[in-house]
Image (cartoon, rainbow, N blue to C red; front, side, top):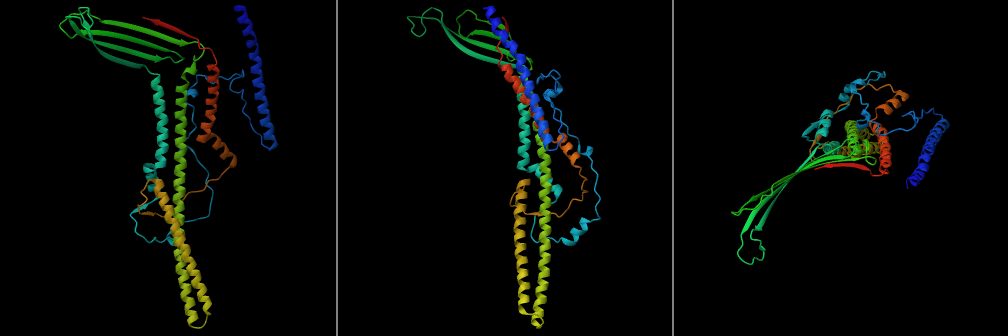
Length: 419
């Protein structure tokens, strides 16, 4: 049998180098095709080699490095980022707004500026709260998984009542006089288990039994204490860092959730500013439309005066009235669109829909940046948080391959117990 096992194992061992060589050939062909496709479109792509991780061409996804449990995040502070301002002609937006803006008629209870809108959204917005709770759920999952790797203590107390016939007769069908004894028996089972970092588990169990006579009769004592220790260590399947895969993945998921929440927070902030500035523009358009109606009214009055004096034909006054009515219709359409946009904005930032709101007119006085396409692309590849998540999730897939490979190994373990 030993000779037969050696004959069966030998071809398998000989086939392993050939299989590994075939995988390396596939990697080389893939890299070459990517380079050829990039050359056809005129791009000089720097294709990262699959074999760059280790020189021997056999990367190990479970290298115990700091980046395994906590992938590094490139996320500089806003003060560390700078840009060169582009020159523009002198422009005073406040003067333009002051000349063109007039208050919108209507009764309002709340005046909302840009800072107040952002503060309200980050406090009461359902959208922001959902994203925050998703991040908290990832943190709670990590806490639950961490608890699995701490000593786990169990203590179970079981009381039992026992009636004993000291005369030797059957208690349920006594044949004559009998002497019964009622006893209380307590069973206390205390157990401590601890997972081992590279697979397996060690446990200690203490079982104590105590019996107490509750009647006047005397029965034999049953007090006893037993201790049991066990050690279970896998040798092949489940051995090594693969045993910590749930903990490792939970730790990395927390990093991913933090990046996703920060990415959402930034996008949410920009969208709030964009929608608010859209409301400001709509309000200015309404104010301009009202000014246009006043000008059309003056034109109508002038045409009517000219017609009355005989210096103008009547249809010219009718055309002026028609243009004024068109302006009034456009104003009504703009006001309805503005009210709908304000209601949607109130719902998004967490205000009641029936809350009367007045949007303050303000514009952001910011210098537009000088944009360099190559620098912008490089910064996006380095700093985008969603791209960092996607890049690190590739390592998660590699670990899943290693985990599946470990799952194909035989389940061989070493068990040691002591009483």
